[in-house]
Image 1: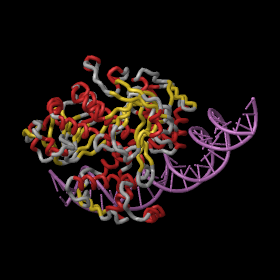
Image 2 (image 1 turned 180 degrees about the vertical axis):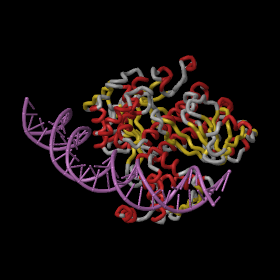
Image 3 (image 1 turned 90 degrees about the vertical axis):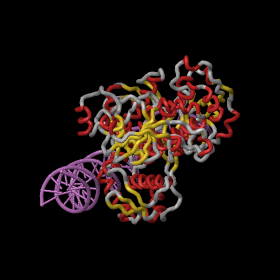
Image 4 (image 1 turned 45 degrees about the horizontal axis):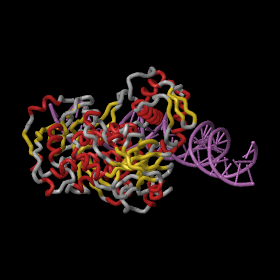
Length: 258
Length: 258
DNA sequence: CGCCTACTTGATTGTCGTCAAGTGGCGTGG
DNA sequence: CCACGCCACTTGACGACAATCAAGTAGGCG
């Protein structure tokens, strides 16, 4: 587990969020281009993390928001029994650390899943700017609200006791994310390991493996290593319970009889 | 299931949040009294709901935030398979509807668990006021952040596969809430039914009943109907994994051998 | 008093976790 | 270039814990 202190020496440069192509999906969430005039001057520094690098730890004092520019991040909490629970996975456009605003303390540990480029934003500076930009303020509220919505969806996922459904839902969410961000909804790379998925969904690794196999056997997806191909998006969404379309209920029944 | 439209006729009066005793734990979350000068003029109307009354439904257009003044509320989502998942329970001081800000649409259904007094706050009006009150703005951001934190804790709860632990955690959280709000940490009323608990935690009602029985047998709590007495708060917190104190591991082992 | 709902308790089934062995990709080093 | 070892993942056998099915109890309310 590498120390984040070492990272200061990695390529560090100043980013101006106002001119960033991702602005409207990042700190300027929900704003259209008109609302961004005059351009807010949010200065973030860009940092590069490698697989396993820690952004911050539980108990660290809150200072920065971390916007994922490329790559992926996971956050997890540790119970006093020493068990870890992965809370969420963050992909480009997502902001890590919003949960630390409330008491100015990180209560998760954030770790890069692979080579990841992050925009590090000083929260106090951002706050000052946002006060002078009504649009930015409103957008930031929406971003926070969206994060609540995300966690709620996670709660729904974990609420269903069917492992098959949980896995399907995760894949479906990823597909949805990629589609929304201009990538292929059907072909993408799983940024996290089976172990991470298992932990996040409250399942054993073996179960994850088996259920992914099940999805493959059913012709819903193809998966080799971490490369996913969604062969039947409607079925996938149907199994996940997040779309009206899908196979006949009989298909689910067949699976059950096995 | 009663219609919320009927409720307009119930005692409706105007509340001035600025002078409300709960202000600093509600819309003025995280502010101390100095910061509330000049007092913000947030006009909420007070409404009374009865058990089973619906505040809003999935898909309704977002307009109001609902601050619980007394009583309790649950929110739930419905999957396309028709299964319901209870997302969260809201107690006095909590605000319902923060997740609807992002796209101005409610995606949960909110329902009163018992006789509940709510402050209904027009979001757009609140937004206007908050822009002119820096403290209010910052406090509101903290409130949103705190809600994210809450949902994260729920994710942790649902992540553990042990039913015993999930139940313990719920009770412990309630105890914590009551303690933080000036009530007894050891004697309180469960505002929700066993069925609701089961649904929220992803368990069967019977399991909830048995695990509560288990907690009783272990001498951790006493519970008759919905009246809870925490007999051993340290053990409870230990089982829940949210405190350092607790019984020796042997006590857990004993339970396991049974 | 009797019905209804919420909850409890018991017996059985089934899903998923655990234990165990095996496969395959990948980087290292000879 | 290949051998090796490591790690992530897969697959199989078995067992445990919670779901389900079923019956029974206890309040709450007409």
